[in-house]
Length: 113
Image (cartoon, rainbow, N blue to C red; front, side, top):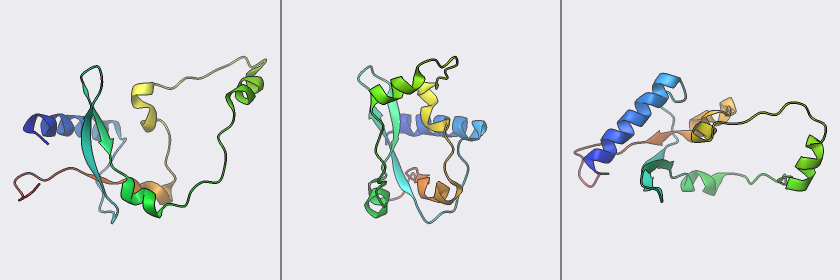
């Protein structure tokens, strides 16, 4: 990561800490964090969970079809919406799975970091 990316990461992580979405951890699990540039310019923070995915058991349930979902909404008087920029921070993670979602940022000034 460049110094500019490290500063942006630090700012984003501090914001997430302040909002209570993340917390310091000493879990044995850890995923690297990186930035991916969006088509419109800004960088998006991403976590590389490839190693975790290798040991996960796949969920056997199927995603419902969109037409079935719309059928269930017939006659409903209230709807909700999610704030998409913060979408992943609006859902609770099962307590037993929280340690698996750890991430690490690159340490500065270590050889090959």
